[in-house]
Image 1 (cartoon, rainbow, N blue to C red):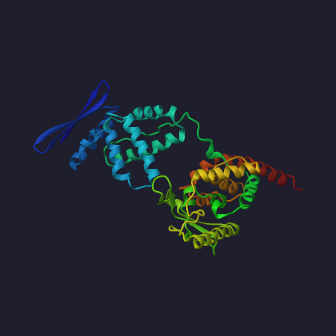
Image 2: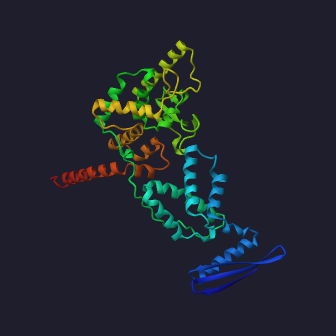
Length: 378
C-alpha cells in the first residue's frame, strides 16, 4: 500500500494503491486546496485500509446514506411526531441531493441547499430540518465516511414569517378575568373548562394535560407528575413525553387541587350512575368518559376570552401566559424552564426573549433609581 501526491491545475490529488484479495486497486481523490490537506486525506485512507475498513462507503449516495441512517437509528425510537419531523429532513435530502455521493459533499453545495429552502420556510423550520441532517453527517464523520463537516458555519435565514401564535399570551389582569369567568360553570360535561384552568396553573402542553392520570396527582403534597402524553393524532393512546426533561413533578396551588378533587368526584358519581368506567384512569374526560379535542378546547377558550374582553388565544397560548406571568413576577428563569419541561434553559431564553427584553428595560430604570437614592444620601 502506497500513496502518491500530485499537483494539478485545480489543486492537489492523491492516488493510493492497495491490494484487495488477489487484485491490486487504486483509489484517487483530488481538488484539495493544499498539499498538506491532500497528504492528511491520503494518510486517513491508508489507515482505513490498514484496519480493513470498507472504503466504498464514500461512494454511497448521500440520499441512500441518510435514508439508511433514519431506518436503522431513528425509526421507531421516538414519538410518531418526532419521527415524522426527522423523515421530513430525509425527504428534503432525497429531493435536493439526488445523485450526489458522500465523498462529493461540500460546504458550498450544502449552503446552496439551505438557500433553496429559504423562500419557502420560516427560519426556525429550516433550522429544524438542518439539525437532523447535521446530526446524520456528524455520524458519518464519526464512522470515518467523510472527513469534514459540510454544514460547518452554514447560514440560515428563512423568508417566511414565523407564526404569530407562539408569541400570544394574556397579561395578568386579562388572566384574572379569564380565570374567574372559567370557574363560573364547572361541570363534567364542560371538561374543556377544567383543562383551561389546569393549563393556566401549570403551563403544561395540551398533550401532557390529556395524558394526565389520577395516580399522577398528589393531593396531599399539592403536586402533579407529568410522565407521559396522549397521542391523539397517531396512536389515540399514551405516548412518551417530548424529551427527558419533560418528565417532571411540579407543585400546584390549593385552588387547583380543589378543582381537580371536584372533577374526580364528578367522574366517580357519573361512573356510579351510568356504569361506565374510566378504563385508562384519565383526569380530563367528560361525562361521556371521552377525551376532548384541541380544537374543542380552543373554541371554548376563545369564547371565554371574548366574554371578558381579552385577546383570543389558544390552549398553547396559556402555556406562554403561565411562563410570562412567572417571569413578570420575578420567578427564577431556571425554575421556570424546569417547570415547563424545556430541554435546557436556552430554549426558555429564546422563547421568551421578548419578555426578558421588556423586563430588562424596566430593571435598568430601577438601577437608576437605586443609584440616585445612593448618591443623594447625606
